[in-house]
Length: 305
Image (cartoon, rainbow, N blue to C red):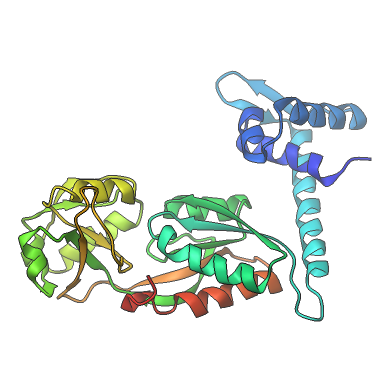
């Protein structure tokens, strides 16, 4: 008799095409995953995988049937667990996996987690960070139940629940001469060096924003993290964008970073909770979305962090 954990070992090895990668994801030893595969192969007298030097693990036809049925069993077990984690008195327990767009995550996620954990101390929340593309992948792979992201990276298999509408801000060093202005137009910025986050959906949004007004930004650097953006702004030259107003931000030289409103109306963008189409949302997920609505509905005005 085998437990569900061993089934998950096989399913993840198949999905990732690698025992090594499955081991890292599941935080178990490689021999434990190999043993689970070998046990199932011996008990059912089938071969689950063939090893390809260039492509890693590949499922045999029998292995594909086995993994498909295993996925169904794991999904049904999760539904069963959710049912018994939802009691009549409103008490919630269990685990929720949350994928977060890494750019705004340090500003948005901590207050939600703090208040949610206070209200539901028996719920564990697993966090997975990445760009908007990675958030969608986490949802499609089943590694996350919900995603906190922007709706500017559309995916056919993903649906969104809007938390609030956002408006971008200019982010620059207080030393920059343009920082004296209360509002900046895109014409003010077009010839200035732009430090633009290299993130699917995000960079295209701002290129299109300039294009709406027949302008083209002068992109100087495209870092992949906010920390690098902050570092590059430290010199006092250039500017960047943020969808969320960043309070009391500092550059690496200790100087202040300021948020400045934009004069031209931007393309619409929303902060959303994303989920895979067909995802059966239980009371745990619903309670978390409600907490996001309560805590994050004011971020567009800058009062929410």
